[in-house]
Image (cartoon, rainbow, N blue to C red; front, top):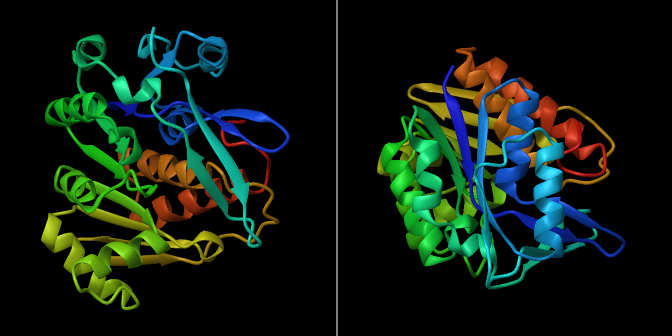
Length: 280
């Protein structure tokens, strides 16, 4: 079983009533570890109170600390979170932040043995981190790309570059509709537009989440759907990261796509049904 490196932003999600350690790579790394995979997290925090707390919590979560870099000049990342009337989270991402400055020379030792790479779009916001992620993509056996659009930091050019480099691409329904529209595909016709997108960027596996409606995937000639699991939603932050972690776990175990999709929907719904993205 190959190791998975998760790379990108480590942030504190600032809610009206609390501060919660998060960031998609961290959330996914925690879930992958809980599922029994060998995982490394590569990120960067500031030499400040939040950075110290982040490193303590990351260690407490059972993740190796070797990939957490410390920046003497830039602060630890913070994201202001608010929820709309549908309980969907909206994010105001502060900049600059330490995770914009992930240094390849400090990350390179973790690439000495075989690994797969899980990365997103936001983590490539800064030029230094973007080049580090690109360098690790070239060394990875397979790349898993979680789109996670966060305008204005997630440009069409960056998404294209990331899809081209990746075997597996995951996005939510809103992102699928937006991205397919970029190329004149009719995203309402899921299977057809998905195949067009996969062909254009040579995507091996395309996975699209539908929130409470479950999700679907395309891989070669296969098109698989799952209706999801009904739960009382408490907090959707981290649910998509948990979904992708469970899906990757199933894929790495060689399970059929329908089982991968079912496990992904189940774990995503379990995370949505409780507060916090990284709790076991």
